[in-house]
Amino acid sequence: MNIAVYPGSFDPITLGHLNIIRRAAAVFDKLIVCVMVNSGKRPMFNRDERVELIKRTVERFSNVEVEWSESLLVEFMRERDAKVIIKGLRAVSDFDWEFQIALVNRKLDSGIETLFMPSSERYTYLSSSVVKEMAKYGADLETFVPKEIIQDVIKKAEDEGWRA
Ligand code: ADP
Image 1 (cartoon, rainbow, N blue to C red):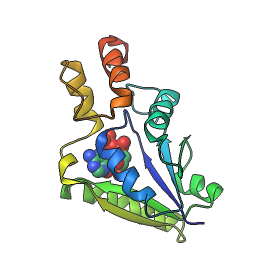
Image 2: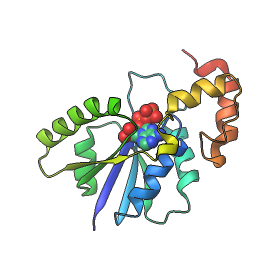
Image 3: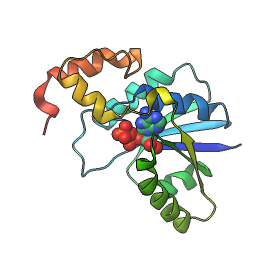
């Protein structure tokens, strides 16, 4: 079975992420969306909330699973017998960093490949940070995040607690 992992912060999941998930799920037998827990960042949604929001959004895809990890990505992949990392690229500016990470991951485990998927042109401007900024000012979120989670983002944005 060909298993790929799509790692990220997903704080929160956007329509850009969902577009990559849909396309990657069509190519692999199984796609695991992995919420990477980074203790250095102060997230809008905590780990379990992020996993739950993604699960709600990807329910319709039978070969997509959602998990979280706070270990090294290559370790998580070995445990799942996954060989491919999926990364979405929005612009050339994403490339430098992602290329570096891809090389590091290959150094750590030569059996793991990184595949880059170009963002759909509709979503090249879209990031979780943009969503958080727009939510703060009460903008319409329909063109940014999956409809299943709009209310959760609005609610969280109204609650000042998450802001650093
Ligand atoms: P963000 O930059 O939105 O905070 P994440 O860390 O959650 O993103 O990103 C996870 C993965 O999704 C990365 O590979 C990133 O390049 C990709 N990605 C993020 N937004 C988009 C988008 N709009 N289109 C395509 N890929 C994207």
